[in-house]
Image (cartoon, rainbow, N blue to C red; front, side):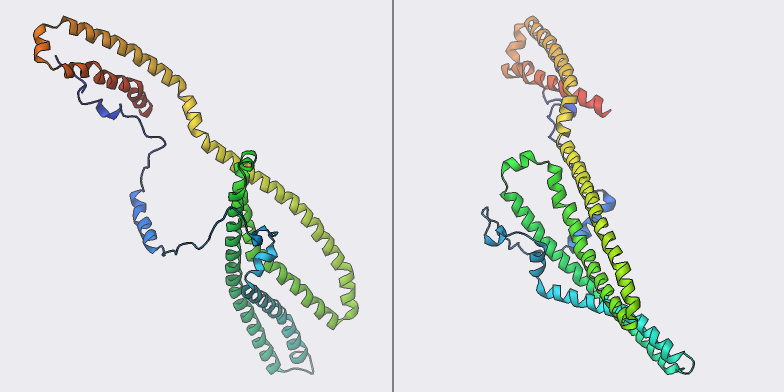
Length: 344
């Protein structure tokens, strides 16, 4: 008796094997493998983390977390950044003063002096160079200080999330938590790296300009301060409140997007399983009907065989044909053919 289709060796093509959960890893594309290997080879050795986590927060962690506390943890870098900002502000405003001296002392009739013009021009170039160098170092110092502060903040936020109860994560959306850990902290890093330095720099610039105005003409400076400063303060207050409302809307929008993304990714398996429910029922029922007919035909065929066949054939081989081979064929019909049609 011939049993075709590979009954003894299992289902052909591997359709009988249950598929592993999730999507298979396709591997790294060949055109990117060299770059990936180079990136891994150039990766520095990172020392083991010295952070120690305890479920019970200590006294320092229980205190209110403020930006001042985070910044004052690095007083040297903070003082250096402030000193560089002062240098930038003074050097940037020295240029107009040098231009004034060059005009009044070197170009006005009766006070012409080419030497004064050259000296003021050199002083102007020096002030511009000093301001550029100070800006370069301030960007480095400010970036490093912002990175250190943000690292401490991320550690504190993550430790705080680990200490929260399970009920918090049940009530709170996953996207909101992700937004607090990613976009909000990145915005704060941008504020520390650029915004805070620019705020101090512009404030010092206003102070220097106000002092120069009062030393030049007190009446004109007083009129400017009385008319311009209140309008600027009012516009700043209005813009602050309006930007806070806009920023809150943006934060809520980002949180909603991340929530939808997180919940959608988690629900892909469920949606896929529900979408395949009908096809699984149909293929399972079809496979059951076919296997029932096959078992009846095989059993009837065995009943018609002669006694010599059972004498020569092993009982285990006959049982294998009646059980495992038919079960493999049923698995092929139930899963393999459906996957073959789907992939095709």
